[in-house]
Length: 92
Image (tube, rainbow, N blue to C red; front, side, top):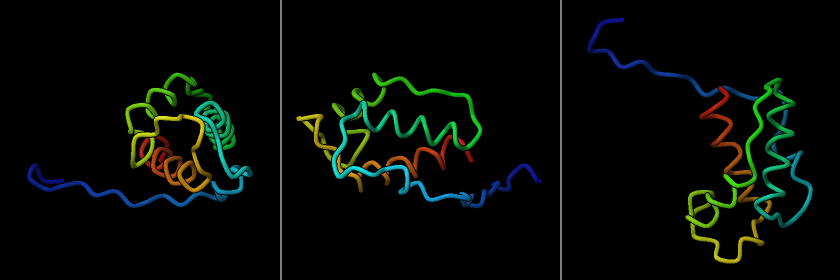
């Protein structure tokens, strides 16, 4: 690759649906953490994410689109969307 060329990466597809791991309508940050760690193990990785990371992300508005002051009302759709982005970024 030439020095001034930009390397592009293709989106990796999963051999499973992330949404099948999320069965509840609402999650706490700890609940999202447990499910995300199950997905990571299912993918064959040993890495475990700490629950504190999810509480910090939720309180700072980094986990989802808006700041979640309650920290107890993370919808299934929000959890799935965040997990898909995280897994694509860190495990593809």
